[in-house]
Length: 608
Image (cartoon, rainbow, N blue to C red; front, side, top):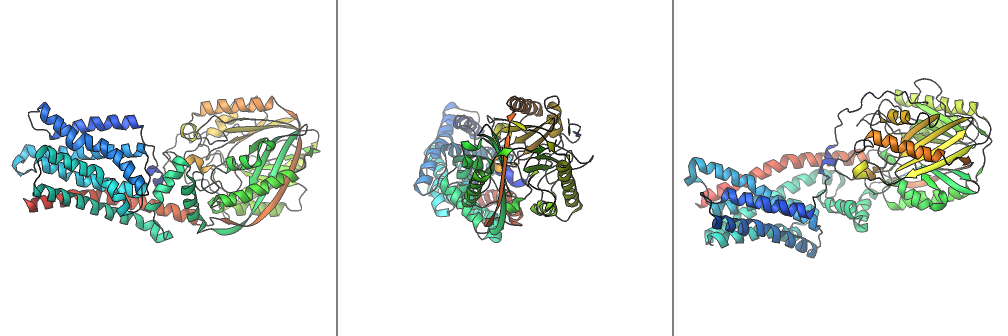
């Protein structure tokens, strides 16, 4: 089968994740976090309790300054944050309570260890429990400032609740004196000040580049990811819209019909399906499938040659593209195919293959088995211009986007790779048109959608297959709704399709909705074993082949003028700023934590 001999060298290559994606994580289940709070509170109490251990002393310490403040503070955190205009889920609030008791443990352990050498010079049990609330407030405030409300005044009550309850617990166990109250207040003030320093430092890169608070975008981002909150989505898309430029976008629709019924529709807008989650043009395959409706049959949205420069900033621009796609769907008059060709590669080593199907020539570009990723729109535009006047019909040009190695495989205009891509695609299109011959075409289509980005790395449109019987051959076009396919896995899938069809291509949509899981990039094949993926692809192709029926094909294309897009450089600027933010935050995290501890110890010594 054509393409099945691709090398699989490179499988298992280490993949460096983009730094900013490490901040994406999923909070544990509430029951799990509460269980860990109880366990760590017990460990904290055991570390700080007098030796020999007495049950009564242990229980007072366990309940008073540790467990009850963590649990009650969790409830108060959610309520106070909500009352003051913020938002934090109970699940994340409980996780934050878990970090309180976890952060205290190493501080208490160091205190106990120091006491073995010189107990007289060590702070008392009451003091060390109060001192530990400074780091707790430091961590809580930096978290709640972004998670709940980007305002120090509005976030402070929720930040303070558990540390104040712990201080009350210390006073209940050890008694209250003016000096203890003063020390507790100073420790908390130090923690709050260090947190404010950290937040100011982390906010600088995005504020400097875009004039807005990066920390203030954390809550809307989480609300969009976790809740698809319309207000959060609008906030983030409004940010993107501020930096948009206008561009002309071409939209091509190819329809496949049998017996007067639409079997499948290929939607090919020159739009990149990003930037992230479901913002703007991200999740474009699902959005276009829903817009085209059931009358479109099974909708395919392959990745066209373009980069993040052609991300759409908001849903309004997606709506413009969808409206044009609906209009083109109505005007793409289906007709019997007069001439067709097999899927052809013009020469060994060519990056392109093409197939003539009546009024449309389908052409795919892939550097596989080498890394392959985004192709500049200018490359496709040059190819279209060179093809003008060389035969009739539309060109459906696809970036197969099917051999992932991070930061490799882009085809940039003006490079030798771009020149080869244009020449190979031009030769493939000409070869397909020259090889076309009269004869009917039959198509079959199938899809499987029971996948998830978290478990399989596959978006909501799942696996789709269109099988075409033309010019005496069968060809399968397989589309995976995901962000690229791990290098080498295309070859294994094609090998699994041998004997089912004569030729095949495996493509991905480059849907960036799959980024919103821990780990970020999430290419197909990273979470879902290739053996299982190839098995499912074969099953979908076999189903499509079993439904072959005489087909009529229609095609229509038009240009949408003056559409806002993110434009050149915006995504690089944003990702660079996010990376700088994470780097600053990581460096300042340790330094401000040590600042809290050392300053608190200096204050304690000064007040002795």
